[in-house]
Image 1 (cartoon, rainbow, N blue to C red):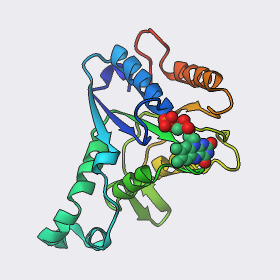
Image 2 (image 1 turned 45 degrees about the vertical axis):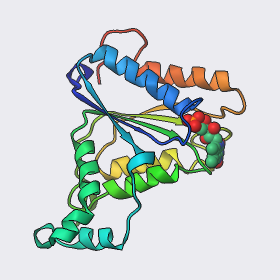
Image 3 (image 1 turned 180 degrees about the horizontal axis):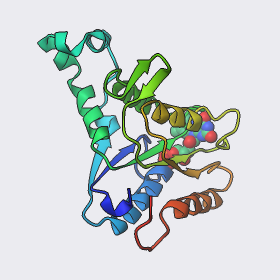
Length: 209
Ligand SMILES: Cc1cc2nc3c(=O)[nH]c(=O)nc-3n(C[C@H](O)[C@H](O)[C@H](O)COP(=O)(O)O)c2cc1C
């Protein structure tokens, strides 16, 4: 797919901060460049802090029940999760912005992951092991850390996210990392923009996916 065909961009931010958020600012830059290349694209913003619940017993029981046998209350228990899965399925491009919190991803993002990893919908188990059911598509993975280098032994965030997206069938992850912002914020942002430039050069004709 070329990015000129992008109709829907799903943006998911997970920083608790709004002002001064490095990941949100980099995310804005990604959107700006995507919109330059795809002026008619729609941006759907999933506001995790306003909308995501944790799994509960009703959810788990309903999810374990064969869809044909679910009663109305079980369908209701999965409504929000179904919506999040549909939102993901229908996006041509995904932007995920993620600060490192306590060496991993923010809990709110983990809550979203728990909602979208759905047997029969986004993955299935086969004789050969698990199989992702979503079609591949670009995911701009914007991440920031205060102190840890990405890819180091104490980074339990970036490898986890690569694994989860691969698990549901999406492997085209495009890292944009601002690491160790507490060491040198400016150098870290410059490096992140250089990574972004590889996927979406500034001020340019549509990039080829
Ligand atoms: C609750 C919390 C936990 C954090 N834990 C870590 C951590 O374990 N390792 C790290 O390198 N940075 C950590 N940081 C720093 C953030 O990853 C860094 O400030 C990042 O820029 C935050 O993203 P934001 O600017 O988009 O809010 C933490 C920040 C917060 C607020």
